[in-house]
Image (cartoon, rainbow over all chains, first blue to last red; front, side):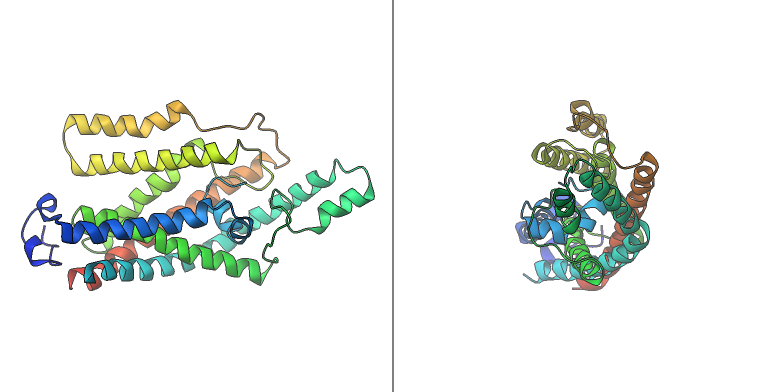
Length: 65
Length: 238
């Protein structure tokens, strides 16, 4: 567990203890952004978005049509 | 905010490169099969047409299968360009999820560990939902879109939580809970079409399932490896 050099309070503590608010909030925000992007492209019912992403959705096995 | 910014930078670089690689792989592996399927689709949509006008109407549009009358990229460079853009954008999206999840467990310790996280992404996002809803070609029958999307999301989330439990905890209860989470969506069952009858030859569909699974596997391994590699440079060093 020597990978916590992001915040001083996280240094040298195990993973659970090191998950402070200062780390949890950015992690949550990054995950939310990821969900927004993947969901927006993979699940959009907007026809133009669907058609632009058509080959991608088939290739990635997203439920399509 | 530096931490958030660094996560985004790592995800953006890894996602963009993996998305580019995925586009190249798709052009060789999956796209030729999609184009073949579209020929069958066009034939089958023409078949019931009794008058030349109707046949013409179906054949003329690039938007043949439930694409409606809306805009669609024209075949060739434009279509490939949009596929590339979507691969890069979603590559970054998947990378954000991968990096965020791995940060909860202490962060990726190099490219090699990243490859294993990529493998976990492949299991959660491709293998688990793909067992119930295999990759489909155009013109293949399917159940209503809404329930399928719901089942897909539920299966991905439960597989993700299951992998987290297996990875994080060594207790028997956690392992049993993980097994239940992995199996439950398949006991519930993915929404299936009323009939599986399709104009697409079975052999073509089989080739497509293999091609989609292999390209997606390569994507996840590349994405994880790159995220681990760049994580060391942008987050660990920060």
